[in-house]
Image 1 (tube, rainbow, N blue to C red):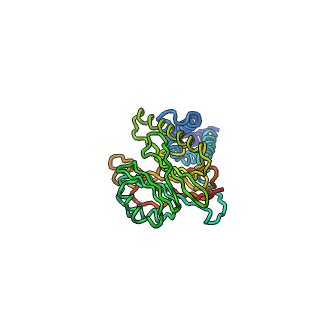
Image 2: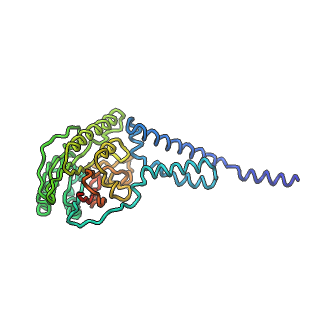
Image 3: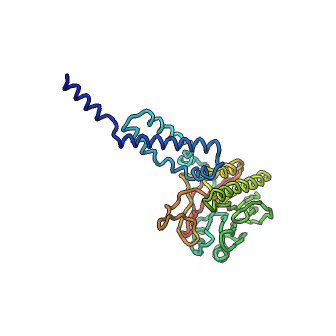
Length: 353
């Protein structure tokens, strides 16, 4: 009997969690608390506080530890860890599942489709040959360009004039230049969309297949600084300027496409404002997370660095194509990259209903 009791004691000791396992369980509990706490605050308050805005911007990466939580739940067979993992998986599916499902698109003749592209080419980018090559390879019908400098504008006029005979170019030194080029007849619309934009939004009217299409090329204010007061200003200003843009959209009866650099991720109030009256083409026709920033660490690039170490490429989706309900999104994808900009282009194939 004494021998049997000793064996049972030894068996119980073997099944008791080690100090390391106990620490992992405690850290997993803390992880679930942070994850569910962020989700509740985000769903209720949006971007009310600057720190919540930052956390939401990188929310995709809050789920990277889920495989570790899953393995720990299997090893320990603890009900609380299993429930935490399942709820986290459901939350991830709710927030990002639509991006990971292949889009279901209808077949349309190529004549009825308009292909558009938005491209932030980086104002300090002097690789004009690479930019021209990327635009040519895109085969887009209409291209909206942000951060258009004079050198790039001259190269586009010189080398792409035959492909895109209709051009509305407003180059500037630095990052505030804007431009739209088109295969179809196009004219600028003189309208002011107020706000502290990086470059004033361009509004043009494109004549396409007997219809008049309104196109808006925008570049929203970026988070210039991580200082709370300055970051808070950019968050509020971005939401205000996009509110003005949406009011303009609501005043139109014509089919509309708004494309450019939003400077925030999908998990933001600014994106919610845009989706209040427009469709996000990537959500409708893209596949994957669609990250467009940051790219090259060239001169003037906004790619973050930590001492001598650069951040990884393509961490966030900042560039968008939105369209009115008159359009059906056939497909959305990442366009050709020139290799020097800190953004990748986004393209979409649209069909007028």
